[in-house]
Image (cartoon, rainbow, N blue to C red; front, side, top):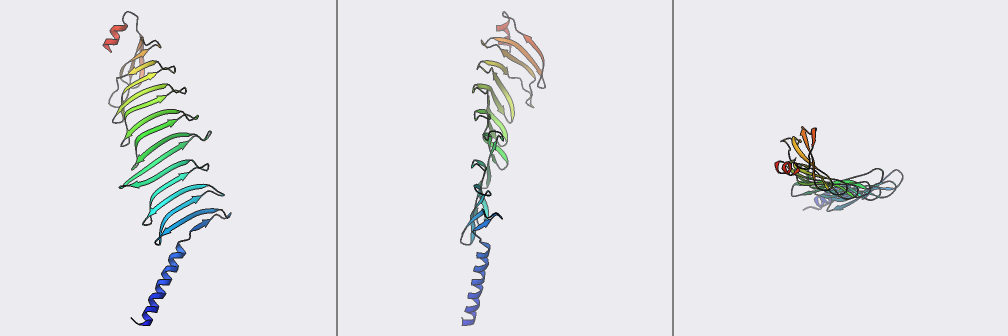
Length: 232
């Protein structure tokens, strides 16, 4: 190979290197001078990035493979995680955390796979106590779902099938059983008879529902209580 060709190839290589380096600025700044982005490169390709709030504090972290985003985290100004994204075996997996604007405590935490809710979703009261827990499969409620009173006692225990309720037991705030719902239609609406109990566990009344609306409530007398329990 002639010396001229070698010089041309060397010049082209140097030019390409300069162009790549020009595109690989490791840091970017706000107009205020505070650090905005921080990048890392491997073999000439973007590997990771960090974004910062102005004037300080981590805002987001990103990881790349072959210049494509494969993972991301977003943080609130106080450093709490707000959102997480990752790709695993072709699946888009997201974790979303919502917060109360007044207290800053977490309000809801959920996971989505390819845009559909999966696994356990948890809601919290503003003081951090658990308010509700629901399980999802492919975007629909499935299995157990529970709600809690502010005092931590069970408020409701539901069973779902393919996104619709099939059984529900509600409780007084003091923990005793209050209502039992078993008559749900194919749309998940109350259509039928539910049992109402007093705090001593005795059947107190029968509630009649139509399309979720209570249309009648009959008190159950002492002598007929056992018969109604067997019938319903």
